[in-house]
Length: 400
Ligand code: TRP
Ligand code: SF4
Image (cartoon, rainbow, N blue to C red):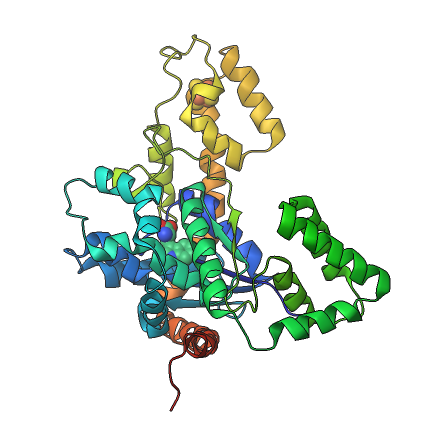
């Protein structure tokens, strides 16, 4: 059985913090054992907004990949690579650009939002408008079914699906498809074939979405046809012909509930994070200085954990028993905030210790990161190039 493909990427931001770990990396690590995973550094995406400050990209990439490995990504289980080492991503971006209406890109909510948030920068560039298109190419080139991302990336997944659908609609017409599909319907067997036809009609003529779901389930469960025929019958239902590009789904990572040391979202640009390579004494100092529920101005004032940034750390790091102890102690002023912070300090340091040991090992092996990336790139290239051959062919580019 072939495994589903998973793909995700991050712009190179250097050292990872515990928000990255609990918001994304931990999930990436869990997925690598079950799926065929591709994880990459989106260094071209970094240039869409930081084109005037390119010096940091190389070191940020190195540091970030080191932290990915320290967090548990295993190059034997997943491919880790750099976007800029795979020109196929750029080629697909160019080709998909031919069929992507400008309005689709202008309507992606992050386009206007980011222009406003980063208003000190001129982001009225072609590259910045094309950010989601390039992301679509990153995803579609691997035929990834699942893309683990946060809530903020959902609109990028939507436009990716729209572009894939448009591509399949325009270029997926294979001569003889209809005949082949009808032959596969026959092979479903009398009763199933009738049901399939009826449900297809219900969907195509009346837009009955339940009929579509039911027909898809019927096809998936059919024992009498091959995987390729199943794919064909699934495509036939929606009127699409051959499916060249796969529509991906977001695999929503519950946004990390950890707030930063100042109570805002943990973010590198706010400087309010705890890095994976934070020394134990520094972890202790940072958490001890963290603001708590303002109602607890004095030790004798009761507070509410739900209004306290420290409690967001307990949510991630503490057992139910510890959380109950916090709630009880906080609301009755039975414990002080320093008492409350102690188990979190210990838990963070316990979690980081093995990662920091791995960082030491990696630093002691010069060339290791480069080797990992070279190897990941080679694996990614095989898949990316295979997709490009189909895309070039579908778009009628000559292979003379
Ligand atoms: N836009 C993503 C982010 O800011 C990074 C990214 C680029 C990405 N290409 C991708 C994520 C493809 C998932 C899949 O985090
Ligand atoms: Fe926050 Fe804990 Fe202090 Fe309550 S006791 S305010 S949860 S640090």
